[in-house]
Structure formats: structure tokens, C-alpha cells
Length: 473
Image (cartoon, rainbow, N blue to C red; front, top):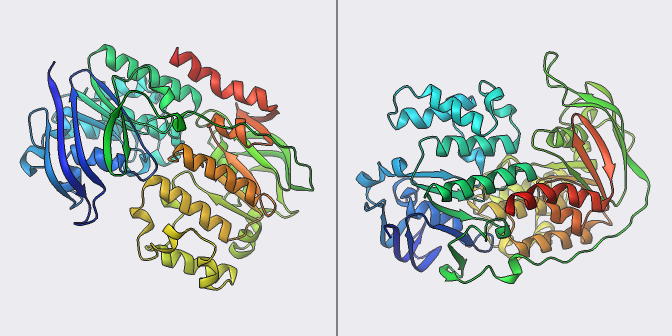
């Protein structure tokens, strides 16, 4: 069997004497699928940029050891230039990957850079494969998170690479999108392609993996099966009744007068100390609803009331006391270039002393004050946004795809944080993650076809599980 990748690295990282990977040896053969799991911040994404040469050639990192990829050395600047011909990479954060204004331009960008002749037909074909034909000319910023993920897949596979690397490919995708990814991976295997997949929900891909590796304590080790902590969860439900604090009455919203309505005639109430799960397909309006509740958007028709006030009319400081919105892309939440300055901003808004804020956070955050939040791993960024939201002491916390990028241990820690904080805040979780519905939600709403309906917990679980289970069979 032809060898595609050989890694023998003593250590690697961004700064000398601060290694992220150590004593890593790995061989991957043609047609094999490697499933790589590991805790949040363990170095999975670093491994990907190491083997593709990005770590040393673009990010000024260091590698002590050797990497062979399709017989070339990606660490060498000259060989690095040809890596894109062999490899397609879908990053965990789609916001860091997309560069052009429209989907058709994004896919064409890949083909034109690689010298493809008459690339337009091929670009259109791949947009159709990923269900984006009708949005080919739209501004990328108007796409939902899941649609952006599918665009990354289209742009990364349009040149039909021999090695496809998927970093958290199901993150931000609805269950139907997850099913598409699973079927796509199966099809790539059938065609003899080589794949590397990192995933915090490994059960999606265990049946398709030829090799399973775990990255722990800076080292990659091949294992026989995914460790049990990556597939076991504890169920728990609870019932809460309190005062109504959110009223939505006949809400309709469109982004412009000629734009289609995202939501139409939506009405519901939320009570204090509830944990609400809002689920639905990508592009159905979950994020838009979150921004309406948080006062970022003004209703086109109808009314949104938070503590009997319309959030879009409140000034910034008064709004933060009542409601805060945490976007699915954590980089969008940060406003400063260091964690220290983020805390100083919180201190300014809340009036709390800086040292008082530090006493309320975890040691790893308190010891990283001079670091940039943008340099953290995706999961660490997410956790920092949760921490900052808590420090603002907002009465309602809206979390958009909060579990994306969190390993199973952090998922459980997140649920514990929700339960610990429920006496002070009400939580609205915009999510595709069935674990949220199974383990922590008090109520579940489904957004579909511009409308919103409440369903029972069991129906919510079935709604999210069925499309994935059909694909995994």
C-alpha cells in the first residue's frame, strides 16, 4: 500500500521551549481514513497545520523532526508551494477560511490559484453538490454558519485533492448537514481518497475510520477504539416555573424590504430561570432570533419585550444588564487584543474591581492575562466567552452553538456551569446538539419555514437524531 504521510516529530509549536506536540510518530497510507480525537486545546488543529507546512511557513512556528507528504517535505518553503495541489483542508472555524465576497468567487479562487482552465463550470457543479447554487452570487456574510461550512467544503474539494483534512467538519451543521458530511466521507472512501478527520463527536465516523488516534499530553497514539469518555453522557431533566421575562408577539423580520422574510408571525414566552433550546435547520433563523432578542436587530413587525422593554431601544450599558448574546464564532465576541484588556472592559461596564473579577475565574485564564484571546484554541475561546458573559451578570444569556469546539469533558462542565448559574440567569441556547436537548434543556422550540413551535423533549431528541442515524447506518 502506498504511503501518503509519515510524521516523526520530536517536538513542535509556535514558540521554542513551549511545545504543543511531542514525540509524535504517525504513518498514513493511501485510501485510509484517520479519526483523530483529543481534549479541547490538545493540539489537533496544530497537528493539521504542522503536516501541511503552514505552521513553519506561514505562522513562524518550529518543528524538530521530519514530515513527508506525498513524497515531498511540506516544511521546506519550495515544497510547501505545491501542497495545495495534493491537499484540501476544511478548518474548524469557517470564518478564518473564507476570503472572497461571494460563494462562486470563493470556489473559483481555489481553481484559479491552481491554474485550472475554464473553471466556472466546475465551480458551479460543486456549489450545486453542496446545496449552494441559489446563493452563488450572495454576499458570504448573509450565509448562515452551516452554509459557510458547506462553502468551505466546496472550496476545499473542488480541485479533487488526494488527501482531505476535515477539522471538526460537523461543527455548526444541522443534523441534515451532518448526514451529508457522513455520506460525503463514505463516498470519498469509496473513491479511494485519504482522509484525516478531527471530531468531538467521533461516533459519527468510527465505522468509517481505518485508524483511530488520540492526542493527549502532547502526543498522538494509535488506539483500538475511541475512549469511553468520548461517547458516554448522563441524562438529566428538570422543570422550572417562574415569571415571564421575554414576550415575543407576532414577530416578523426581513433584512431588507425586498428580502424574503426570515421569521413570520412568531409568538412565544420565556420564564425566568429556564434553559431554552432553539433548534432547526441551518439558515432557518436561529441566529436572527437571537440577535432580535439581544437588541441587535429591530423587528420588521410585531414586538419583542425583555423585562417589559424593547431591547433594540436600550442603550448599550442598560442592554447588557438585561441580555447578552454570545456568537457561535467566539472571535466576534472579543473586543480587545489581550485577555487583561477584556477584563478591564468588563470592569468598566459593571463597576466591579479588576481583582474581584479575577477571583471569579479559572486559574488558566487568570494566568494568561497578557495573552491574546485570538491565539487560544477554538474550545478555549468558547470557554472564555462563557466566562466573560458570566462576569457581565446579564439576566438573560443567549448562546449561539455553545457546544461547538468543546470536548466531552468540557460539554459536561458547560452543563454544570448552566445549572450553577441558573439562579441568576435565564439561558437561550441556539443549537444543533442533541446533547443539549437530552441533558439540560427545560423546553425546546423548533424553527422551520419562518415559523416557530414548541415541542416536547422526546420529540426534540427524535428531530435531531433521526437524520444522523439514517446516515450512519
